[in-house]
Image 1 (cartoon, rainbow, N blue to C red):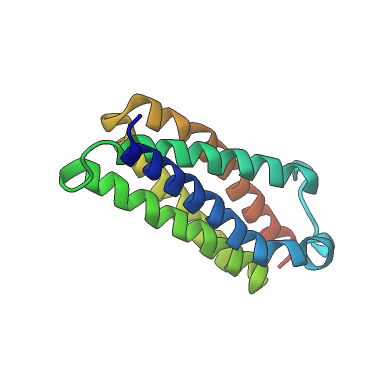
Image 2: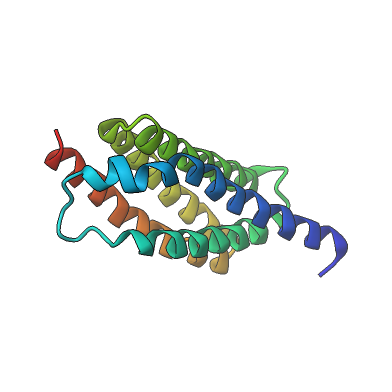
Length: 159
């Protein structure tokens, strides 16, 4: 790996983990207060599961975007995939601000459905560019599917 690739990898990891850190700014203060008071569906994971899962997912996302970034991202499908990734990552942070920061379960649901759709499109584009990059997003969309369902049930149970 050359110096430029090392810098891209570091930036990818820092950006993805940074998104998680920003999201936790909104999330952490509400876990033991607002979120704890919500009626949850039986399949809701214990709170202790969320941090290690998200740390892992952000790491996998970082490696995935690094693999795409190593390709030419100035034109065509690579550029589209590159941009879509950053848009969905930004929305990921927005979800934390909306759901936890604003305590809006319904608005959070709208945002997470958008994230899920963007991640699906991003995955499809990643698979066309790099099979490993697309595969690295598979756990993310799986977790987003659970999180979207959880968000929907929280809305239904806490209207």
